[in-house]
Image 1 (cartoon, helix red, strand yellow):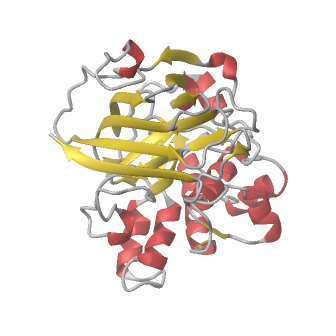
Image 2 (image 1 turned 180 degrees about the vertical axis):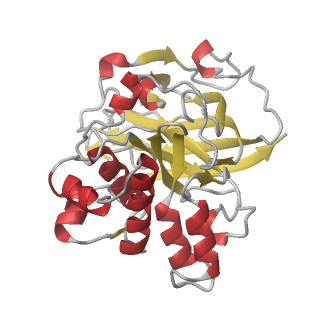
Length: 362
């Protein structure tokens, strides 16, 4: 990610101050029919802080899509300073908070969004303007965790051999991932997304940031623009899937990465082979076969369709955290923090505490 492309906007450090312009993202865009609105609050505390502390929290998606409108991103860092840094190409917003030594590092981010279910009708190609070439090229590039050569390209080429159209190629990749991967409950968080390692070691287990990244990397390798969409589940599934929704208003462990592929005539198409595998493993009573009726319905629906009980954060890879002394991270879906001792483990509750809650609003 090119940090020179960032636009910085000062945030407010305590409650009651007016929002700066960039925080009022799409605040005037009222939801239309079919839209639901959610308020998502992330509360972060750094425990056992040493020296100055930096905290980074992902904002709701910067920009507007057919499935999500970000109404606002508000943030507080009492006793410190905070700002919103954005990168339009990746829909990325990062709230960076800085705390001097001796101040308790506490950050609160409140995002308001509107979402609606989204589906592509493959029998009716759209007559919409093609996305800008610069955008499509951005989502064809290789990244550290998404190489597009070697075993990635070789595997994708073999999978799509004989596929005649881009839709056929995109579907062939999707079906292969559903058939050949598995959700590994022992994977920490949402996984790492190291797709070259997965293919070279023939270890095709993982979670959403692994399985959907595999789709994105292979799609890019054969010339199909594709992107991971990092986010979090914000509500229960209305389609009867207990495994594909938040079980309560506390969603601290509900992060989920989805994927999109760009197909001429249809635009950005939602896909989610990882959630098919989640249904296989976790939908009660668990360990369902691929030919199970509920799995088959999810498999059919999740190529070209999303239920939007979920909030998107960004499309970014190789994220350089503003002001960080550490290396870029593969993706930003969890809060991050650094003390004078270095980068904290964002999945370690003994050093790094955060709670994320969601509620539906009128």
